[in-house]
Image 1 (cartoon, rainbow, N blue to C red):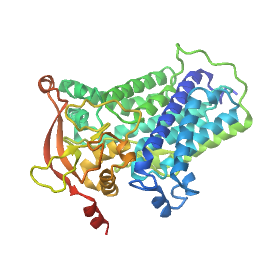
Image 2 (spheres, helix red, strand yellow; image 1 turned 120 degrees about the horizontal axis):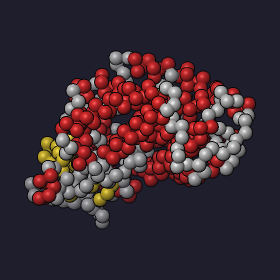
Image 3 (cartoon, helix red, strand yellow; image 1 turned 90 degrees about the vertical axis):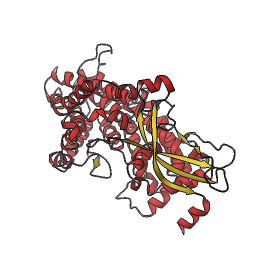
Image 4 (cartoon, rainbow, N blue to C red; image 1 turned 45 degrees about the horizontal axis):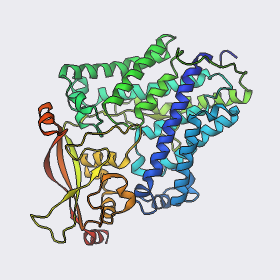
Length: 476
């Protein structure tokens, strides 16, 4: 059955599936460690409240059957353990049907989390992980050679990720067309990494080269994925290199890593890995399942293709509640100035000009100018990311800003675990406020002289000083 299988891609399948299982494990780990403050029964956006107004058909999830914080934690931790086992090779030690069941379980469990995650799970890489995870079900395991049709489905997904991102840039901000967007992007991206300061200070001509190379990688190279070898492998390697460049320059959760892993399936040979093991002919039921899956992808691709061709292209949209075939694209517009929300508290009982306010520090988002940004991706800090969006517009925080303040006024342990530093370890503050600052990377001279990575200027008030009586009146 030579038309159906492609043994020469066994190594690419191995890298893709093992790597994707690692991403699954990190996604489940993040869900387990962060959900109580964000989504739990006493969280900022409680899942039970969401389920009460959302039917199953709009948001299929195991939690539609029942919800408790203990059940959610059990699902998240079980998913993390199962994904770790698959990453270590469990799916290659069991029969084909069992391997497919393992991958289906990972997809179904994470879908259940995403579909009740509300604002905290509104990122394009959630759909990307689910779509790639569903595709992994039909790639098989060591008992069969990789199905050629599914490998092409993986390339089609990779094409949509890259080409969609390229199109939305060319249709969006003018700075992408005049090659100047990276004058700003490294500084204003949602969560800079430890090397972002250095990328920002590259000479302007190199920034223009970065943008031009990005356009080539996203608008031209993806077409090479469908060319004969070795052209497809060359295209995939170019995409892998550009994704690693993005990994070094910022924190974008697992977006770059899943994109990179998809590209590994288009490379036909990895000299450092062993050759493919001897395999049997794929069973007829597997052939039928693969054909049905690919037919579904073809049918559901109508909406992403229509979106790609539209002058009003939407970015990161899912067209069905199962997230099977989605559309992708990010950073159609670039912010020129970075604004950050800084949360502060005080234990003073009366406020005045001499009141001492102390800052809360987040793990990922910029705060203290002397603190070097850390590398968090592919792990995802959900509150930190939403704080960046809230600084762009208070509308992004309308549903969770006051619940966050309430939990800080209570010194809620689950919420404080989301932070790097709480200035009130003993007793909770009496007041919490939020101020808006403009942030810029320091110059090399400022870094050398003052040991600061950022310099910031106060813009004004984001939230006035709030205490429990203020919040109680607001709720009334």
